Length: 252
Image (cartoon, rainbow, N blue to C red; front, side, top):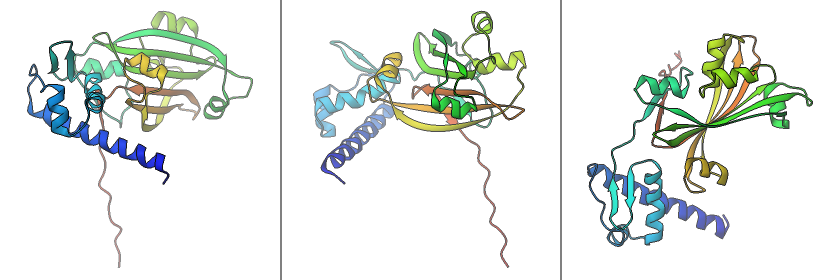
């Protein structure tokens, strides 16, 4: 491993350790309580104030800490968490409604354009085909907690569908229409670092951690009708999977 890579690995390990220490401290405190002053906390954790602030920013992004200029940093009431099993495909709106959380759609960007090479491959298109690119943020209490991008083959949805009936979920819109009939979805889950564009949408720092779902939505005919990217802000979502216990094969 090169010296540069070793330095990066050490930095990541150190950041994770500090965040773990902070999380343990926050767990022992109550909403409204004030964290120790930064110099004291940095000394306690054995880090610089700059490193401490970097770790604290993650918890600020999640709505767990609130920094007040001249007053200090306070523990906040944990935000409402949208919790969902991954066995059933549901929209954020459906999940939020279940817990009584109001979500709204932020700025909506709709674009018709020529399909990119990767989109041609994933959607089974021809090189000259066009796609509909739908991008928007999902907000709760005025804060962006998810950013969704759906890429659909031309003809699946029309302008009127999006201008009149659209509330933020392509899935809900397709289900309401019933055409094309939906069959299943495949999803790949990864942790990523926010690039400058995504960081600006969420109001976080470049490089902050986000959860990314890359998904393919299939019709009953087996056609991919939606290729999507869903970015989630940690602290506002909790996903789980119910797993069946594997059975050992009988041996003689």
